[in-house]
Amino acid sequence: MAIYRRESGMDIEQPYWPLGIFKVRLPLVHYRWEWPECIQGILLCATCLGAIPVLTEVLGVPFEIAWGMVIINGFLYMLHAHLGDPVVPGWITPAIPLVVAWLNTYAIGPERTKALVALQLSIGIFFVFMGITGLAKRLIAMVPNSLKAGILLGAGFAAVMGEFRPGGRFGQFPFTLALSGLFAYYLLFSKSFTDVREKHPFLNKAGRFGMLPALVLAIILGPLFGELSIPKVEIGNIFFLPPIREIINYVSPFAIGFPSLAIFLNALPLMFSAYIIAFGDFVTAEALITEADKARRDEKIDFNADRSNLISGVRNIIEALISPYTQLCGPLWAAVTASVAQRYQEGREGMDSIFSGAGTFRVTTFIAVATIPVVTLVRPILPVALSITLLVQGFVCARVGMNMIRTNEEMGVAGVMAAVLAIRGAAWGLAVGILLYLLVQYRRGKE
Image 1 (cartoon, helix red, strand yellow):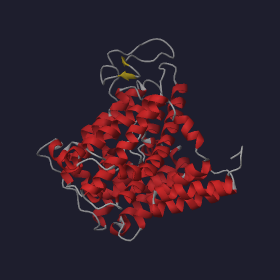
Image 2 (image 1 turned 180 degrees about the vertical axis):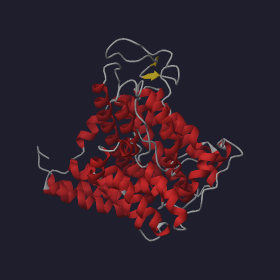
Image 3 (image 1 turned 135 degrees about the vertical axis):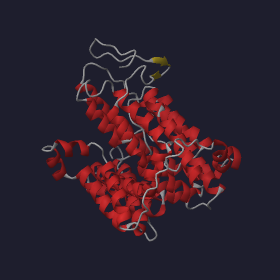
Image 4 (image 1 turned 60 degrees about the horizontal axis):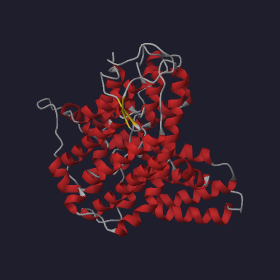
């Protein structure tokens, strides 16, 4: 039980320590520990650790450096729930293939790392600016649906194409990735599974763990097909401390130098695309939290998009200066936030506060990604875990992007823009999309 939990009152916000726009809440002080979210956080840390193969491959850093960067990212995840943002944050996942493709246009080493610094610092500053001014909604309202859909479709295409291209991960782990990936699709998106889980409590509980059953299947199938090694769990030392000094020497702009103005300018189209993708997460977060808030009258939940923008911006700026991250810092892990919100709606017996669910999950993942036995257990499946995440994200991006389209003209503009964006990158994709919109859709005084 939280020390400061209010026991009476309807639609009353639970206690916090005020800090400007932020509302500070601490575990076991302002919210209780939730064991279901704790267990889920331990197991789903494999998804967080899936950033390691991208960091090692794209930035060329050693495994231990990449591992330390994941731990830093995990620590910053905790800022959201503990500063008053009632969500489980994550990566800007749909942007990952776009970011990787853009970074690959720079030589691996300091030049490529500087490009990532420019991108992440730019988007961090933009997040903060939008949070301070409250301009986010107005900016996104100005972007036509066809361009929004084109960005999401292009990100989805790039995610799937990246896995199946020659030299992609599907060629390295064909059976493991095919079976575990299809299993993830079935669990997350199949209407038939939705019907089945309603009749079977065990399957209903399994379905709440999102991609986790698919990752467990990969751990089993990988060694059976000879595509992955059997995990070798190390139980000597317990925790891995991130080598901060070495990380700074490898990737921080204070050690390798700051990017040039030309690189910052080159990053702007991708920065804008990534922000539009992230803005969809703000909309999703508000919808999930509003739904949860209506279901219970014992706690008033305050979701503030400006606060969420500010925290996301601060995370990106800190990482850009210390540990630039190819996944970028997004405002929402939609699957887990939905799971937390759903359990919250079951009543206080199930979850004391929305912050106890989100806070417990992110504290646990931070501890888990630094726990050597846990990391050594999931290390062999990290590439497959990342692939499953991207395949699922590709499905979601395609579905959401298509749902935005209302007319035949929008369909054509979005489709061509998506293809160009996936193949040639964000700058070309945005340029083609804007040009097609002006030629095909635009009419003075109308869209």
